[in-house]
Image (cartoon, rainbow, N blue to C red; front, side, top):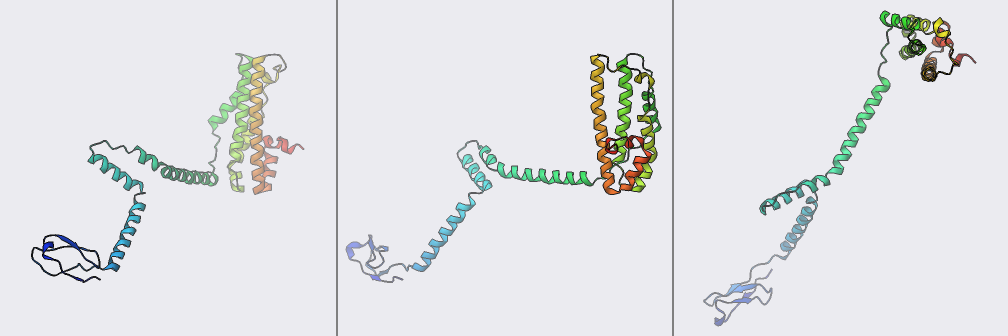
Length: 261
């Protein structure tokens, strides 16, 4: 702390002189008087300097915020009468938004997949209308062409087999098996109907349209039989006795390749 008494000459009146101890600037009044140098608290000065440094560091950190920087740039543009371009700030915030969107999508995907795995399988009911439609197609007398005849017959046959597979998906208890057994028996009987007109077709005859149609339905039949076997194996893992019952009472299932070995 400086409290030195400084005496100035008369010719220094109205001028600024320097304290010999602390180098503070002092203005000499018009009359010769004794003045004291201002008290300087060096410790307080250091604290204020440190505080300023902390504030500067804080300001430096805060300016990294996209929103504060955007606002600062907007005010600067307005003060200059310029149009504010926010595109660069929107691009800066894009990675964070993109990451958030990806997380939301991932959570939703996991949720939907979990629901898909645990959702109850609805029962497919064989109505009389559908059964009669399949019976009519299996016993078709379509005489437009051999291709039309075979198309109608094979289409009904494949549909019957596919419906059996869809009904099997519903089964996971003995009670559900009892519930759908009549529909399974009925569909199995329909799928195994023999049509004399279809049996009379010479399938080795070099008819490209006929061969193409047969190839199409051959692939469809293979797919439906494969799905039947998958469902039978699933039911077997739950209760082998249910599969034994299916094999005995549903001819279409008994004819699967898995039971022919």
